[in-house]
Amino acid sequence: MTDRLPPLLPRVPHGGPTSHTFTGLDFSVNANPHGPNPVLVRAIRDADHAHYPDPTYAGVRACLADWHGLSAEEVALSVGASDLLHRLARAFLPPGGTLLSVHAPFGELARAAALSRAKVRVTPPEQVVSEIRPGVALVYVGHPHNPTGHVHTMGELKTLADACLTAGALLIVDEAYAPFTNAPTPPRHPAVVRVLSPGKAHGLVGARPASALASPEVVARLDNLAPAWHLPASTAAVLGALPEGGAFLARTLPLVADGARELASALAQFGPVEHHGTPYLTLRVGDASHVTSALLERGLRVRDCASYGLPDHIRVSTRLPGENRRLVETLRAVLDGDVYE
Image (cartoon, one colour):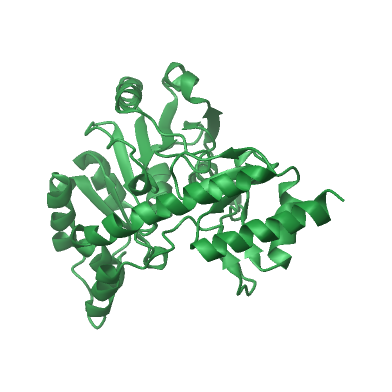
């Protein structure tokens, strides 16, 4: 009987907190360091926590639909993008089917594919269209990609979407970091599923707001896999308040961009840096696991990129200027003393 059940798989690595107590500076989380957005905090405070919410979340759906110029039937709601990606895999990725990912996929989607007993194939951007064929059920692009920062043009996204439609696949466009960049808005297309997790840009990742914008048929499948009252009142309130939160983004995202640019310039003294306007960047340091552990001992957390297939890179997300300077100074001491002596 157990051979019919989903396999037991270890959790995938992520940046951010672990089960171990940490009180230092965390550069492993790609979130707005100037947050949280006070408009969204107020929405959490004012939410009705004493009663069950409307199980259809009709008001929140209508609000987001109007904001995006869609119908309410084209909006699915979620606690975190991870849940949406798991539901997409359960709904559309059959056993033996293929998830095709441009660069390494977000770990939760790869895990969801493994739980579905599906295959994951990673491809570079220049080859992806030729590999979208029958048998490929889902195609994943980070827009921009984490951790490379690669962004697709509108024309490239349209070409991918058309190829998916022909092959009977869905194109998942993960826009977790799009607000930080000038990434073009994906086209409205029957094969496109836009996955939005705005908590990063608003500095409010703990509330886990997320939504998917897709055709009514896809949204219906996603809703079918959601349990009753799947959004806490606070998360629903945050999603409903997003249209009012733009002033915070207009004020802080240029500061984030400046901080990331300055940090990338400062870290270039240690090795090749790849940075494309996102709050995060990658730095090639040699033995990333060693460097990550050495920094952690000194109270600084960065992301080891081994799970992305980059074992000689770390990923660093910008914090406030003084905190960034501390990282540069500590990394200099680590590289000069621990790793290369």
